[in-house]
Figure 1: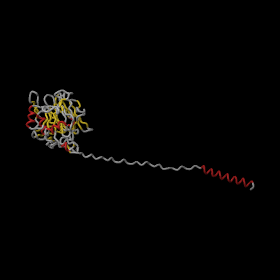
Figure 2 (figure 1 turned 90 degrees about the vertical axis):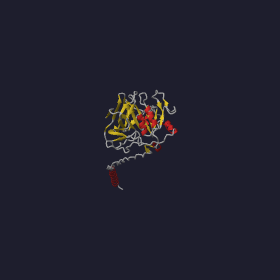
Figure 3 (figure 1 turned 45 degrees about the vertical axis):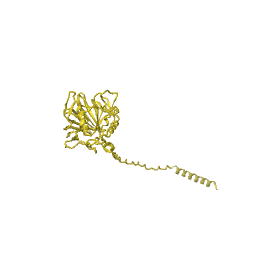
Length: 351
C-alpha cells in the first residue's frame, strides 16, 4: 500500500470516529413523567351507635330502670333534719323523690323516698309531722322518723302504718354521730332499715300509683326557667341553677351549694315541682297545719322551662295529681324530683 492510500484510510477512520462522538454528545430530550393527582378517599359517614337497651324495669318514683326485684320492693320514706346545725344531710342524693316542707320557726325538713337505692348512711333523721305522714302513707312506704308531734304519732297508729321510729328502736338501728350534737345527729343506713323491715315482717312491696314519665325526651314548651329562687323566709331559701350541658338543676341552700355529707357531691334535680298549700300555726311551739288534700296551684320546671300547673288530691290516701293547662297529668323527666311545698304568696323568682 502506498503512502497516499494509507493517509487517506487514516483520515476516513478519524472522520468516522469524530462523527460518532458528535452523535453521542447530542442531548437526549427529557422524558416527562405525568404527575398523578392524589386520590382523596371520602370520609365514611359516622354511624350512630344505637342506645343500649335499658335493663330491668322503670321505677315508679323516678322512671329510672333498675332490677325488677328492687323496683317491686317496698318504698322507704325518711324524715331528714334541715336545721342549720344538722347540715349537711347524708344519703339525700340517693332519694328518688324529695319533699321540702316548712316546719315550725324559719326551718324546713325533707321527706326522702327510696326504692332502688341503698345509701350506706342516712341522716340526720328527725321527728314527724302529720303532713309527712300523709305523703309517706300515699306511697305505702315504711315510715322512718325519730318521734314526732302528738298528732303525727296518733296518725301513724290510727293508719296502722309500717314504721321504724328512732325513739322505740335500739342503737343498732339508729345511732348518734359525734361530729354533730343532739338532736341533730341521729343516723341509720338503708341496709339496717331493710333488715328491720324483714325482722318485723313488714310487707315486701308497696302498692301505689307512681308518676308518669316522658321516656322519649320530647321537646318541652314554656317560659325560660334557668334560675329559680324560693324564699321561705329571711333565713331560709332554696335555689336551683340550670346546667344545660347535663340538663339538670344544681341545688343551693341559703346561697351555698347543697352537697351530700357522704361524699360532698352536689345535689341535683331533673324535675322541680312547686306546690302551694294553705298553712296555719297550730300551737305555741309554732307547729304547722298544712292542708294536703283538695287542690291548689303550682309550677312544673324541667329542662330549662316552666309551666303553670294545678295539683289535686281527693283524700289522704289518694295519689296527688299534677295537671297541666289541658288538665292532663304532667310527664316527668326520668330522674330525681324535688317537690317544694310552699304557702300561697311565697316569694318565688324564676328567670
